Length: 142
Image (cartoon, rainbow, N blue to C red; front, side, top):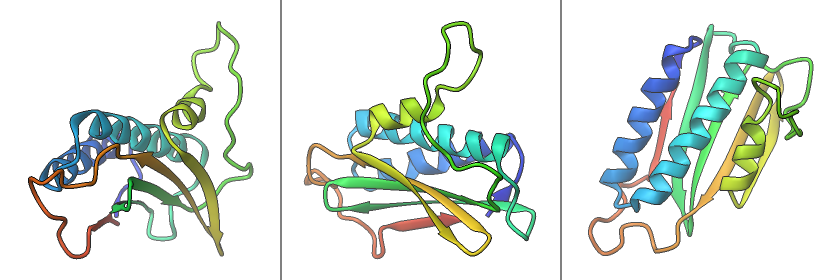
C-alpha cells in the first residue's frame, strides 16, 4: 500500500519502472506503463476515497503479451470513464490517454473497493531473451 497522497505517484512510477526493467520489458512499454499508472493513480487521488486503511493499492504484473497495472481505492460517487475534454480544460484527459496507450482497461468492484486496471501490450515476449520473470511476476504496493 502507498499513502493516499500525491507523492505516491512518483513512488509508484519508480517502482514500476524498476520492476519492468528487471523483468526485461522494452523501454517503450515501460514508458507507456509508467504513464498509465500515473494517470490511474492521479485519478484515484483526485476523484476517489482512500481504502479503509487510509491508503491506496497499486499493483502490476506481466502476463502473456501484456503488462497489467491496477489501482485500488475506496471508490467514489461516479464511475471512471474516458471523456472528451474541451481544448481549454486543464484536466479531463487522463482516461483518454489510458485508452489510447492500452489494449484494454476497465473497472472492477469488490465491496467498497474499486480497482481500475489497464493492459499495456508488450510487442515482444517479456524477457526478450535477457531475463526471465520472477515467480510470481506480480508486485503489489499496498
